[in-house]
Length: 288
Image (cartoon, rainbow, N blue to C red; front, side, top):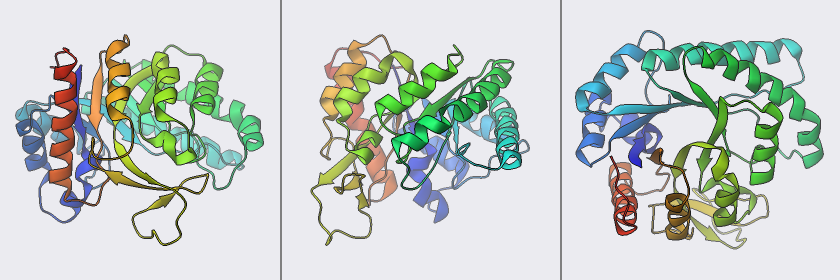
């Protein structure tokens, strides 16, 4: 099991110039991580900058595990659809320049969309994902979607798309926390999705019943509850049980710490990393 950090966790530090990109890699290595996941928020990732980022990570002693980007194939216009597929293929080129073997792209985003909409769009989403993963396979890169947002969320929808694409190079970046966006039990969802996984994101949330007084950093779930990012191990998700399920499964790849709380991000990320590290050690598993 390899424990690392998503650069998204350190977005606020990057944006405020509290830490530079090169210093970020050194800090991630310093807390004990073995890999870093690159998310192009807070740092510019292009064909020109990718080799520089790759070298900076390498100099810090970090493997770049995954490249995670946004994408949306849930569009009505054919030109827009084809342009988006082309754009994501170009991002595959960037992933290759980073030297990764894993790449996550989103597949669909819609507001207030129903299950009927999803069923009607499933083939359209699958065609795009399959074309991209076939292109990525020429680089030796495995592509994946993530249970992300509110539309392409929930274990059943995720598995439906993975089964519809039906390609060995197309997998799942499993975010153990995001299921609560649609009020699904994350412990059950993780167990259902593990056979499809190529990458795991570990995060935690505070969960509260519907309360209109909770504003600002609180997000409303599909069912009306309120959630807010927390330091891993301090929120309301059954993180210990989830990690036990992952450890007991056949999965032995990358775990990426994602911190989305309101605490200073360097502090929150490090404390979350330490918590996951301790759980894995307690379970008798090694990490590298």
